[in-house]
Image (cartoon, rainbow, N blue to C red; front, side):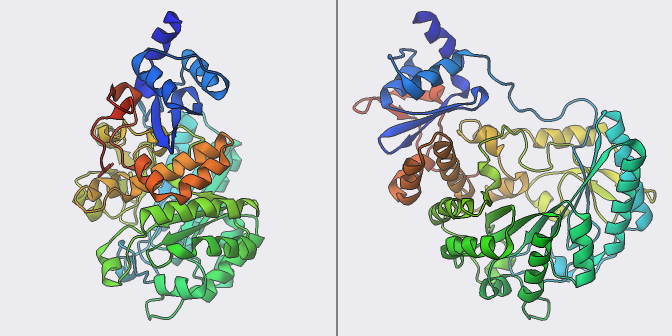
Length: 479
């Protein structure tokens, strides 16, 4: 027993525990081990005095004695982008009431076609250098299809180079779906993975995402959703959830699954912006959002559809939540290359510098080692996240949004619903669906789990009465 205790004790810096009613959810992500157990095991792990256990708890303890997976780590050494990001234009044909990109007011030029062609050729050289066989491009906006020639040029170049070198090509696009049938058909046939922003039935979608003239965009976007679902592209639907629409999540899930049959639905809580405040839109209550998103996952599963929450993907170990940390260069129409598609002014207001370099007229970026190193440091897991049981899965969330949110009241909403949903998904994975459903319904239990400053067992102290407490229980602001 003594040797087992010592072996386990060495690993406490990556073993976490959170309360679920009168039990504990223990999670060791690097050992791929999770269990629901009583307090005695948690005390034993914290004090190096393990009790005799059986079943899932015993398997958890045994897993801790095996070699852990290496911690997910960001890029090192040579610049090796996982994919290429292209912003064909910053302009948009909608005037979404929560958009902070200023896209509806931007009538700027589209990317030069020679630049679009050249940056794909440059990316192909990077793929060859690392010995890969997939040439991947993601299109961001504005709305990419306002500049269809840029998209077509990039895709044609990508496919030509892939064929010449015996590779596969992969294309993704974030789109609002507001365009005619010809462009709709092109997108459906030429984009492998589509993320369509579509906020629900007409009464919600048109309120959130009107045209610049104030008219609704629903009919056209719904037609695109139907065409995409019938076509070869893999369709994901992104829904922005607000205080006014969070109560509809479950019924809208049923409707979206029935009408459009997407592969995924991604409910994203509104992030407050000056634009959303002027429009009278507010973020959803995090407890209500977590409850609704959890129950929506049950409804969607009956249709073979998955509900996604990017920060609560507990099946994977991640070092990065977004393109930052994956060496992804994102080229803007003006030739600037950054590690993020958000506006430079917003990135700088968050106190960050994600500039990577510049591309000349030939589209070939020049990325300096100092810029690359600086961005890689931004991608490192924030210190305040390291004690959270989600940290190996969430990877700290969006660096720009979370860094900026430290200055805003209520900035812990993201962390709270991420922690609740992650716990529910871990419980589901253990076959504890009823316990997950109870947690999603119980506000007091949610608060007890979510409002903790540390889940690391190595930071626990023996207390009086209950036996164990966590130091500094409180709000996880700014994680």
